[in-house]
Image (cartoon, rainbow, N blue to C red; front, side):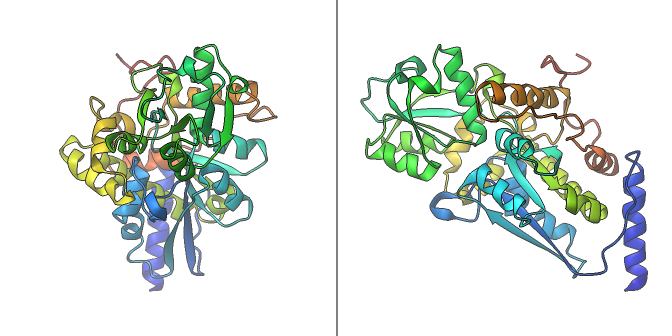
Length: 360
């Protein structure tokens, strides 16, 4: 046992050294539970979600497989109905080590002093949707003025929606905005207690059932109107367990690889459907979109610049009170090491800050 432990630690150290200035690696002798939070939950509070490579990693047990031969390492997943804001609270209370979270809630957390590091993208470039009851006279975003609109405040949809409003000459002050989580807003939409709801692809299911009508999606609109998400680690866990952090990142990258393969498209949607959202919804959302574009783990110059822009705009829109410095927040050593070990350094297209493919 001791020999295997030493060999594992040595292998992890060698892996991290390939990334450049790697931290000193130590293997914890005591049992470790890796606590992973997900800023979403399935339909009816199912412990499954969809729409990202991290969702696949959970559903198919990628992290568990990585640590299968390490009896002292356990993985636990937690899903939050309260989305990003609830994840921030759990991080603040020392209850999570990793999390899948959106850009805005992570920016809010950083502005409030949460110590995290962003490791890789997961669920980036996702669209938002706005739906209304059938028969509504609301046909476009500009028609939302003066209407009761459900917004899940503090989520990564929130800032994206504010930017869409601004592009249409509106702001939240022009609406009767109501803070509702996704499940509540869908129920209120069905009973016509609200005029419109901001949401995700699950609104397509309501449209299919004839309960709602989608009047806007950011898909095909300005790329800046989309929302981004990532896998993060707390600074405390990363500092204490760099070897475990490296292996967790490698597991997430493997999930990204499978989720980016067009041969797996239908199977991927079926796995995501464990969330209670029909596979048809994911099929419609991804129509015309390469899997690799949305499931790439890369924090390329484009995404990093988007986070920089989001930080500035979040303050401009009054969603955060302090300036947020994103420099030094992205820790790409582990991702670079995993890509090198797995031979995936050129698997995904990198985009420059101008949105164009690097080298094109």
